[in-house]
Length: 294
Image (cartoon, rainbow, N blue to C red; front, side, top):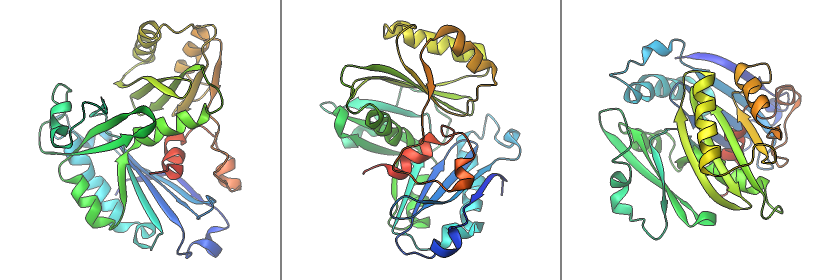
């Protein structure tokens, strides 16, 4: 059913796992599924991550339509945590097939139209849209096959949204009280890069890019810096996701930017000793999803 690559169960789990007020937050991506179980007051009990044992299992022809059918469904059937009662279940999809649409232009019946010029795998897609009230916009996205319908059946009463929606809201919250500060948020996934420019509490730019090498990564980053007229000496660059200091990508970033920092774990989230032992920025997208106010 996939490889369990991260296995964090805090000691408090045994005494609090049966609480009816616990919450389940699930991130579903192209090659992995990550979930977090937390209490009503945001104490983390469990963080697990499953990844495909062989990414070659997803062929170019099958694309995204294969991964959730076999990989995600099997995990959801077999993992005991997914068969317990929760006060709230939230599912965040990390598909790159998405776009930000200004609120004045958005029409619910035209979701597919907003994405028609983006490249995507062949096959059937279901479409969703999240309101971004702070930015007067909608985040429109596509999920392969019948994944949205399946998730509603698998997790009755669950909330579904694009993971980027929660990420942008979390990034905005980090800058609260800092009006006029333009920052570049860099979130790294598996061969995927989300670049977001926040101007104070307003969204100035966001986009997702796929990359293969560190040079690809740097190319997209510098293109956004140029497009958004960012000063490499003074612009704060906030890093999150699958990035460590001992990497080629980080060393390149260090050469080109003077104000680098990793995003801290949100203070509202209460980690146990096991979660505290890993870098705070690795699961920023999951933390933002767990704390997102829908």
